[in-house]
Length: 423
Image (cartoon, rainbow, N blue to C red; front, side, top):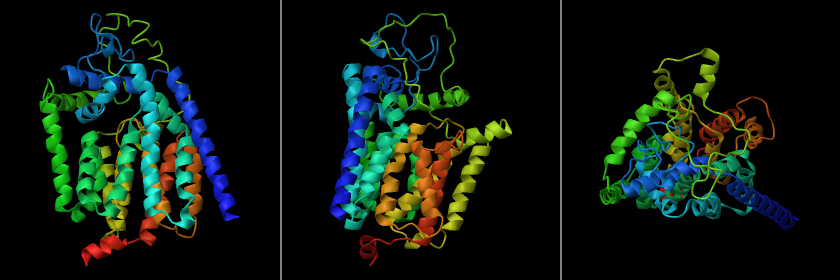
């Protein structure tokens, strides 16, 4: 009977996976990937000595640098990633955009599934066989995942690195974990918050791995036309973008300067997007909707309060927690801080939850009481099966965070490898 149940589970999982993949490839054919376009252009600009941030396309320049989503006459491009992101995505910048569009849609599935499968194989047990198809299949079934692929977003990269982080910590592969941690921070500096709970558990090999990535990154940038200048431009661009946090697009200085060609790189859909529903799951934006404009220091105050709350709650627990559990706690710290930043936060970021949720299901038992029901309600809200509020994803993420905190507080697990290492 058990083997039959597993077979049905796996058939259902494969069906969800196949249908999701076919749907997303159709979306890649039908829509141009408005968020992928600026990332591809950022990489192309980096390669050819243009500014990825302050050099939008103008008539007479090669159309491979044109992004029709940038308002005519704007002084900023739409690229908001770090120069390191542009560096890593250079392979997409080297190929025709059509190839990059389909290739990235397929690669997104690999980046979602491979780390989760590796986590399940390493941590899994016979009685937790259902965890991988549940998390992976549930993620693919989410509207947020299809939004991620249709827009051409890159959060699946960060989700993959977070998933591998749990694996590397448990395997005590500290050098590779240092490489991964440095990579995440170079992708987005705010990911440094993930590793704050681990600060007293770092090793020389972790620091060595991080240093190696930093030095190799510097060497790679020095080999490019503009050297390290893109990092200075990134700083200036982010300062400029804070003025447009509510509009999420640069302001046009001369809206009648020119008209974009109707077809760019053989595609006429670079401004098209599927009308699927999504939300701004920023708690800061929600607070401003009810309370009006908030002082600039509000976000910093809330982040400090969130960090202090976690410190108080876990003050007697953290010494007995495994390093992988500390990374899970770091994920909750990071998430809470991101929710109160005064910037939009859209549904496609949900993919970053895949690794933490799978790790939780594989390594922990949820405490008795309301916690399993809260976790289930979070799934229903995030998948989109129940519409309670205009901020269902925000509510679902908050429920998951509370469940993880309750689980870590009641059932901290100290992994055998950590016990041996401290002996």
